[in-house]
Length: 292
Image (cartoon, rainbow, N blue to C red; front, side, top):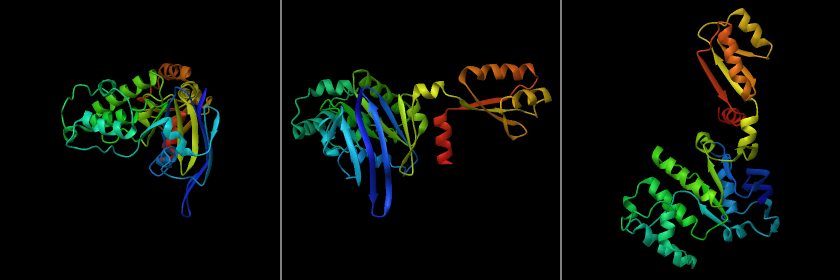
């Protein structure tokens, strides 16, 4: 079921085209990775969805219903945009109490803090929080109204490996309970770990829109590196599969996932064992091409 659909979204800052008539849809319960290098348009999309920036054109549908304004999403979405800002000399709970009062919410703060893994912090002041703890608190703020959709702009910035894994676990937990999640990042590896689908942006356009299952089943770019030139028999074998030699010891093939092991075994049999085998999905290859 499509929960969110955007059509022909365009944005200009003066004469600069930031978004160029892009369209995409998001299924209920998905985790979407919004990818692209800095300046690709990721943050602009999120700010439009939050009602902070007004597009030049574009239509928004939620649950199949056309909305008159992107700002209508505020009633259904939680947002984390830019770095989270809290009162540093107050505790997590007291910060949330202020936000709760502003939003006229009836949320149980103890349960909310437990949900994001901050029930143990007690009266500890936010100024003494780690970056990961602040991100958890920011997510708590974003989900206070129990939103259908959680939209996060670069939430992994500044996190160490432990903080990153903690936030991934939290987002997966929220998703299992029914929250649809959109996460933007310029770092591919972060999103590949847990997203169900990917929208890759480049210069204000969608360069690729695909799902994880499509990536798993599609052909991979496979780079075989040899210590010395492969033997004649190995050369002939690789030529039958439309090999491209980038140099005498680096062979590039496009293979289905179930054929990669067969090719390696055959090369071993032909006395030309590769010393390294590197695979790239279509998403990884496209991303590397636009960021090179």
